[in-house]
Image 1 (cartoon, rainbow, N blue to C red):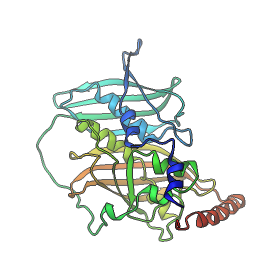
Image 2: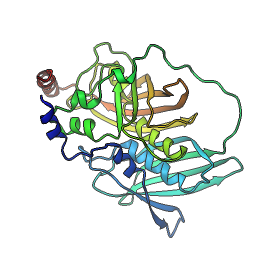
Image 3: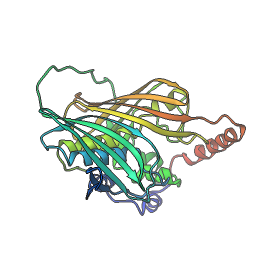
Image 4: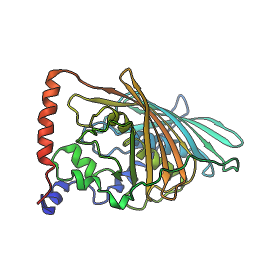
Length: 326
């Protein structure tokens, strides 16, 4: 497919995909709850192909809401959140912040993300004054290819007409480059429970260290369940496959900018009971361990004959669609 055709398919998406992230991280104050006294803020949701709100967006906005109530000198160092129900991308999201404690060194906040009085996400997070102490870290993997040597998502999927392929190619704020074979359309026959990607925003992102950390939380939700899929020979487009994040935990260790390349190293220690657990380590390009992440997700895999036939037809279509452009 020629570049003119790809440019035509891209129409309607932002020239700079990172503008999506900038809008997401800009919340509007909505006063206080008259009963609980919680601070209320409202967040922007961009159009999304499936009509459901991306979980990383809700987490990042919840963190920004919490940050607005904390002394700027205190950095977020941990968060634990539960996804309770999916969000509707056509409706606004309200974030209610409860100020649980402000101590000598730490501040703790609870945030509920709501739509139409129903909770989408319940999250608790902690902030800390800068402090000196013991230092060590797990080493960064070696012999990893440079991100510049790997293709962009748009180079792999930008010519496909499916709405999700177009959204992944042109509307995601982060440039994500897979070290392992990507799973958007094709399963990995090796069936290993690991995954690695390089990621960064497409353009420079302004903001202090807390904003950088909120943006990193956004990106941490992108590929974290892929080690589970890879281990069981599945791709994201397996007919009938149902996936949803259940909970997400994150710990920030060291400063980093999301507009510089970060290596996301992921693995899955277990899958059972229609749930899969993945953990991740995020490194700067210079080898500093920036953050650690854990997430459990629901994964339901259909076994019926009808979905197997759909899968065979889909594989044939994708094999044809992926032929090199002339």
